[in-house]
Length: 266
Image: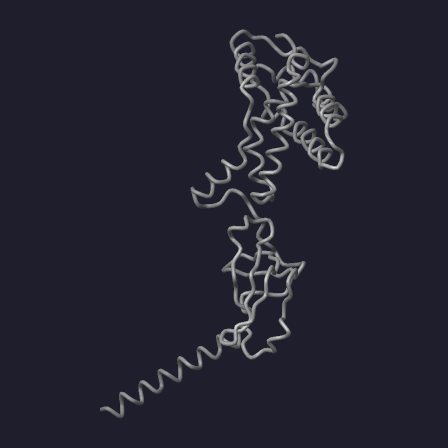
């Protein structure tokens, strides 16, 4: 009986040793410790179940027992997801691979709340008050913003802001992006029901008439209110998003400081 048990234990130890050896080989053990298959800065893909992620190698380390391991950053994702992975988890980058795109709308409720809190744009109180007054006048008193704007259109407001800031900052990209967002979202998100007919008359089916050249500060501020619903679907990480929010807040402060000149009397 003792011989039988010893035989079973020996077989088990052999199986465990073989499994460990296979794992070590898969992880890069036995490779030349001075020649890593991947280097810092390399783009790789990381398959995980049915998903494939693009990542960049940030750090490389060799373990005499377990082989090569890599500290990777998932491209477009928050840095909190960076992690060490064994050699076997990485694959050479393939441009034809169907990659899983990063999204701020995670499946976990806590991560959703984190995304929304980071993307929130603080609206200065004077603009909040004007927004409420404007809503009341339009929805309860059947008034409309005088349009088209003869001056201080969305385009002109953002161009005026651009003239006040340093050119070395990425302001042009941001203001141009806001103009595009405004044109695309006006009819879908920025109009009260009482304003739909007016928009139809102003814009019609003429694709050459851009909302940015017709509407003004009243609807531009509404865009800033809606941006937290749009930004989570971009591919920015937390750091980039925080920087963008700070710059958008600067634009809002410009609007606040010039509100008396920009707003029309309803």
